[in-house]
Length: 315
Image 1 (spheres, helix red, strand yellow):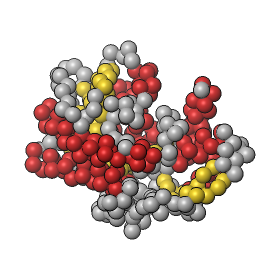
Image 2: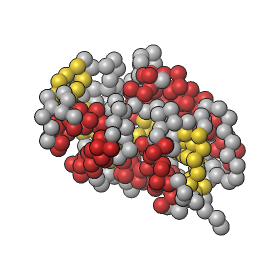
Image 3: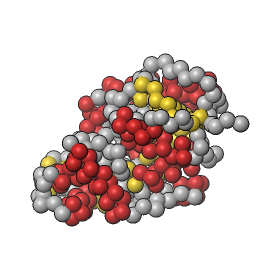
């Protein structure tokens, strides 16, 4: 029997490229599809020439044709940081709706197992803490962040509809804040912003008073959780993230200390609908997948910092 084949949409992105590495390591053939609107082909450069890897430049909101058998489809195509989806609101809505519809159609045609990359943003600015999978969320559908939040909420709904109505095998992962090598320096999220500002000895910008919390998961831990979910029988959404909560101000201090930077920490007004708290309840992932994060934040930050320093040195 030949190798199984996995398709990853958004495969040139931060998470998609790490997933490609993991699936190839697990003995699968991988086809990455990406229109490179926010992805970076450099994230996949090390895989070119590998006979188990193929790249297709394509916008998944258009009809998708992939010849041959496909066993798994991981749908990761979407702008994912506020700076991207605020700049690309229509594309974000289209890839969450039309794109998810097209990719589910491919899964149905190929009888492939489909895994949706959803997000903790489906919980919005949560009224319960920490967030469990049975919480329905507190989202402003017409606010600027709604383009991402509602695109992902719709993606979850259509995924479950394809599962119930067409019998497609589906999995849904709700991803919490993740960091690691291959993040973009101009990504706009807290970690790359803080690191690039610290390394350049610029002011480190904290929005609001810095008391809002996030929970940061190292990318290898996240990928392991996603792989376990893909291979599991769990149909309903599963939170994957690190429950160790930290305020944004503490996080800025950690980055400044780690880089040895002379930067000052300054504050700016909090963007509209920015969540005040974000912490996953991962009891379901522990029970169903036997998963929990292993990489300590100080270790993960050092590895990520090395990556960013090398990127800056190459400029």
